[in-house]
Amino acid sequence: MHQRKARRLLIVTMGVATLIFLFAWLGRVFNPLYSSINLNLNDLFKTSNQSDSITDRISFGTKSLTPWQINPYKQEGINLMKSGAYEQAIAAFQNARKVNLSDPETLIYLNNARIGNAKAYTIAAVVPLVNSSQIGLEMLRGVAQIQEEINGNGGINGMPLKVVIAHDDNQGKVAQSVAQELVKNREILGVVGHGISDTTLAAASVYQNAELVAISPISSAVQLSGFGGYIFRTMPSDRFTARALSNYMLTQLKKEKVILFYNSASVYSKSLKDEFKNALFYAGKGKILNEIDLARPDFNAKASVDRGIKKGGEVIVLLPSSDVSDRALQVVHINRRRLNLLAGDGFYGEKTLEIGGEYAAGIVIAIPGDIIGKKGKIFQNNGVKIWGGNVNWRTALAYDATQALIAAIGKSPTRQGVQRSLSAPDFVVSGATGDVSFRSTGDREAPVQLVIVTPKAAGKPENSYQFTPLN
Image 1: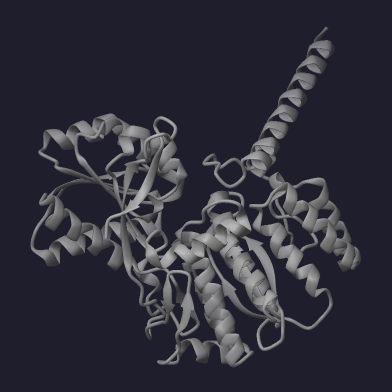
Image 2: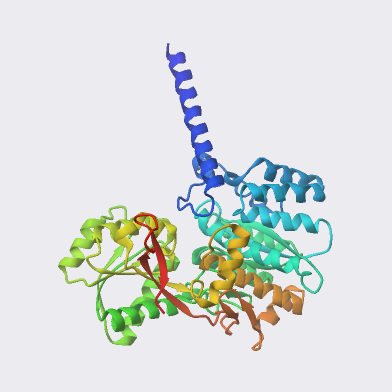
């Protein structure tokens, strides 16, 4: 009797797992670009004591790092890449793109297959593809888009661009190990990555010591400024984001009393919090009534908001990292639009619009560049053609980082030559959000864009919201 029950339990468990797999796969296939659910099958089936080698996290096209996006054509292309049958692999990846147009891994593998064994310049793209997979895919779209464009126009001085993809799970130790593996490959002339400030800082010393340029598209922590001559970024420092938010609060809202939410376990979140406090200090105005840690085990959104309002709070400032964004969204719902809401770039995404809904209306968010203003329209239009849907600032900044590497490789195709080119005072290249140039600290000269959540035009679905530029 006991064995019969155990068999029944095993059958039920396997059935549930199969249904989860099918629903997840179908969701990704039929709504791949717009899904705000950060579901990854690795999270469902990977146990905490399961280990994988670092080389399993790196691929030119012989393995998929996004298994939840696999389809028969893509798998066929990967198998053909393994055997060196590049012409057949091209056809398979082209068919795979028809099934899922928004998959950047497929487009990168397609372009790598077109190169085959021919000589090429090589770069690496390191992104999070287990934790924060949506962010990782947004970054990869930027890399894939410029690879498609540059190779379609004859390459870099006649030489095509090959891209190796790697993922680090947004974990510092893994990021270090991935970096150590990449620097061993002398063909790699530069790295686009990593995904967050924590992992970029963890890997930066590896790249610096090996004299391999790394350009981070979306790392903003002030600790990266002046880290070393081989570390750059296309994302503005938190200092500029904090100034934009504080200035809007003080001059436009004309309010000064702040309830601030952040994540004490995140370098990015702490950096932005500290810079916001500095901005208020130098402005000589504003007061933070409460600093609330979203990562605390006993975090209570309702109690935190109610306590802040009771103390006279006028503005809620949300500076979460992606791993605590759900808690930040609880704050949005609990607030019920009673206080003005300001937020950092980590809050910019479909999740805020879909889950925040009517309570998110009016949130002002600081994002880098000008992706939804006039300057970003050409890039947006090209993105729609390639991906079948809109792209965002993460895609644009990854595009800019890759574009900068391409320009530097074109001037001097060695690791040291790339660094010298990027560091030159007259280095400048046109990117998705404007010109890309770097200060001596490795920081980019770039603007910060304020956007506000507004309802879409009449005739759109109920509770449908969008990001609208403020400046």
